Amino acid sequence: MRRSQKIGVALILLVLFLPVIGLAQTPARKLAMYPSGEDGSRLLYTSGDLRIAVNNTDGRFTIGTSLGKSLLFGFPNEGATSHAHFFVNDSIWGTYLNDGGMHPTPAPVTLNPMISSGSIVSRYIVDGIEFTQRLTPTYWGDNPTVLIEYTAVNTTSLTKQVGVLLFLDTMIGDNDYAPIATEYGYFAVEREFISPDIPTYWQAFESSPWQPPDSLIGGGVLVGGSAVPPDRVVFGDFWSMHNVRWNYTLTGEPYSDSAVLFRWDAGSLAPGASRRMATYYGQGSAII
Image (cartoon, rainbow, N blue to C red; front, side, top):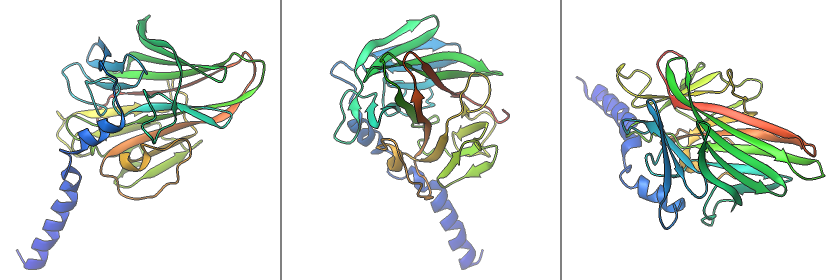
């Protein structure tokens, strides 16, 4: 092999394995930003091939397989780095134990996570808007998945602007890089989709879109079934998006630690009215 060819191969290998460099320090850095509470308590719920771990206090959750393989970072510990933000009249609150100096104020919890009718339910109140988080194990075709739902109810006598942001920190097996693809193809840089041009589904891979058939795939459904398509979805880097409160300016840079940002834009919610926002995420497959 000529010297120029060797250099080219070396550069390709460096790009392929660069996301792995330094991952040994990443979990500690991440978890330090998302404290789990003094007792580290969690609610574990296994249904078929999936397991959900939920922080007993603030409702942050992770998802993995019943055999212990991760689909979100932090599994099988409670809470970890995936979270939700609640928007009410330009005020933003989040599902955290504390703000950690970088996150919105923790949303007051009115119902700690509990299992009800086959779902894990948590409830919060922000300026008279009652938000309910409901995690329901189900199936999309043959793939076990979780229907992640948020319902907002206006308990006040005034119309308010209400929306939800959901942040999922993907980790497939031991791979926190977890490359992402949609029906529009695989991409190694940040990618944003805005309604009505939202992908029907997305996938996160244990190694790559060309991995062996026995490798793990995370799968999300944005359109169809009981999903309510978000107004905006961004596939990108954890370190660029983890501290986003509501607005995010796309960088278009490569990601080395994949994550997904969903936003259901703020809209008017009349007194006594409700609004539902939902998406699916769980175990995927090469064919949706």
